[in-house]
Image (cartoon, rainbow, N blue to C red; front, top):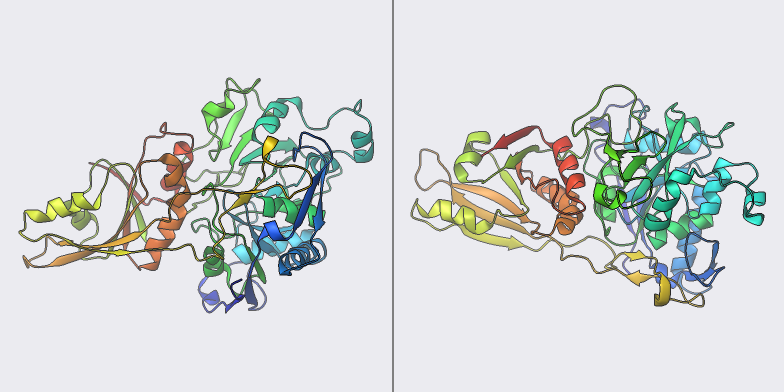
Length: 477
């Protein structure tokens, strides 16, 4: 087991915010292997997390104790805890207590009118939020379900998973008012990360949990991403390895007619349209920042932006374009479907010298574990812990290209840091935020990003939505 990482924030004063933390804290990264923390027990032979389940903590090893301690801090304390989900790392706090929720806004320096997503570990927990007669609901199947019927097909197909639904806020509301930003609705989802599910289950409170990054920055997909942004602002980061999806959840509003997608994510519009009642679901978001009160997280403000200027390119890229838009600067290139290092090498051949390429092998700075999420069906039984180790794409690598510059000297070379995410849309989504952060750490002045077709694959719309929000400039070649 790797040692605990402790860091203090040294760059806190450069961000001005009304939600500034009162003091600099030590931040710990705590590795947790959820497979060693205990055992899941299901109440039915279906072995579904949508039905009642319990978790038996192990009496041996440090993982169970660490997980229980984190859950206790969430249940009793006012300081948020960062933890992995299948989408990105979240920053969680008890959604029912204002003092706890305010600590999220303080750590992220997040605008107070940007609502938060509530995370639950079971349908029973969600029904407790929606109805004061929860015990009756669990004991009597004849009681009306407080979850609107329009969402039942989505829950059956996509939960646990990267889908967030919008629900009417009950009156009186058990949620802290800061969660909803004064809206009459609240957003909720059930994550498929087993570590997240068990953490919420042990805490026995719903968690408000936005992405665990500094506001406006790229979302974190590893524990070290969280540490880079929030060191000194929070106490605890649970490290469960890199995230599997890599972009945030899809947010939908089934209370409107027709239903609308408020934020694209891990569940595509075509997948939604296969569900009864959702055949005519519409797009209800814009790719830029929106005015007015946001109906869901991620709609109003600029998001996902590294320090470097992001230039979104539709078409080919060559050294002439890079020199035109970033003359004399250090450049990052994020390739998706077609751009390759060889393409830049070809542009340099006319100058007589081949580009020199150095490959830096990036690695997920985590505890070495791949993501864990629930199993279903015949893959497990109630006597054993229900999880599997997900297979994810190889970690993106960063290449340093030395290509000819169009300066006065014919021998002048331009340093270009390049990440190739590959042709698979899922791999692009998984590696997007990781790549933006990697290139930012190279202190580049601009990042040229190859756009993809919004219709290419289930995650394409989510990828392009994040890139358009991050981009300061869009060009066609």
